[in-house]
View 1 (tube, rainbow, N blue to C red):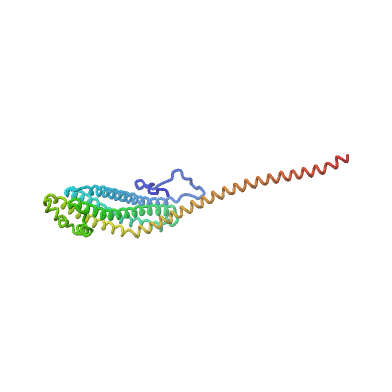
View 2 (view 1 turned 30 degrees about the vertical axis):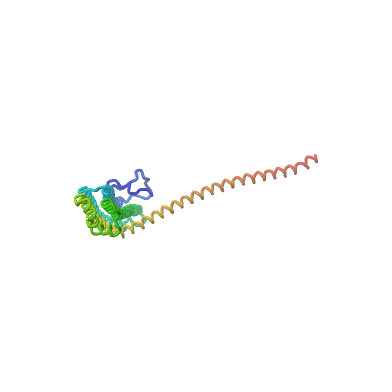
Length: 309
């Protein structure tokens, strides 16, 4: 399917210059066309704004991934705090954009619904097909983003566990049990598991590790909460996403059927040409045979006459 979203440029309605005009159809309905163009202009304006917001959410998601990767190698609490604050700012911005995005998608759905009641934009019109395809493509992008943020949330949980286990192993010299890791993750309390290391190495030696683990625990808790809020916003849009997703599936099916019909037509045309060629070939052969038979008959008829004279 062509990228219909690529036709949107600054809210302009795509036009086809040099389109033929049917003079026999009479004068064009200027007022109706102008009204349709006005509504389509509003539609494309919303689409452009939604595209910009989806793009910003994607950028923030990529920034969160980069910050998370960097956090895995940090061992100082001050650096961890800095990354924690930066990641929280990014996720807060995503939440704000998502709230606005939900409102815009709702409004876009209402625009599409109202358009179906207007002459020239009814079901099956080119305007309706354009609206449906573009809205469905936007919602598909949103659905993909939902999956990416869900994967990010699960990744933060899994890799946080790995980092805590690695820190504890480095400081204590032994691998912590699953129960000890669960306790550190659930409560943020890590001093108990480091008691022996504190006694052997001194409290000051392991204090920064304790602070870093605690800072990491707070960061994960905050991010988990924010990502769950974002996930809820996405869930609120799920009905619209699914509805538009079905439209996209239908469009793709129609495109597939059209492609199959074209291929079938081409095959039938090839077969017809082949049949036509074979028919001409056999006609020529038949004509030659008939001429030979006529020639034989003529020869047979002439020979007795010649001998008689």
